[in-house]
Amino acid sequence: MAEQALQRILYVEDEPDIQMVARIALETVGGFQLLVCSSGQEAVAAAPTYAPDLILLDVMMPGLDGPATLAALRALPGFDQTPVVFMTAKVQAGEVARYRQLGALDVIAKPFDPMTLAATVRGIWATRQG
View 1 (tube, rainbow, N blue to C red):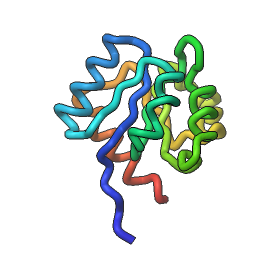
View 2: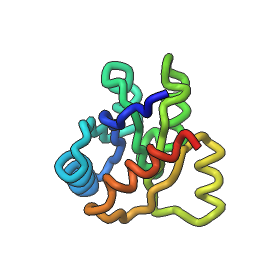
View 3: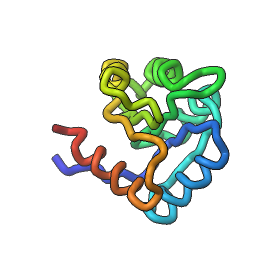
View 4: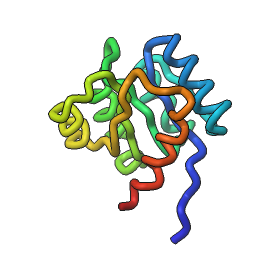
């Protein structure tokens, strides 16, 4: 079976400065199509019409945090298998294990390197089958 190319990313992040850096890293450097949402509620509302290949999800957000947003996204029709990667500064082994138990494919540590973010995301995408 041919590998589906990663093109459309739904990025959920409440901090405007981090959104801007990630947008440049993923769109300009990485060449991805990106929809940026500023809250979990916005992501849950936008996801069905955007139909992302991958969701990048901040953990700590007001309102719906990352884990709650993931649960809400998983409840949407067709989103039970959409790959999700958490982005967080909380990357101790126990925390990373918890995020994976929640269904995250992987975890990207913040602060991230804008010059390597797209390659990191591509690497996670490439290993998701294994």
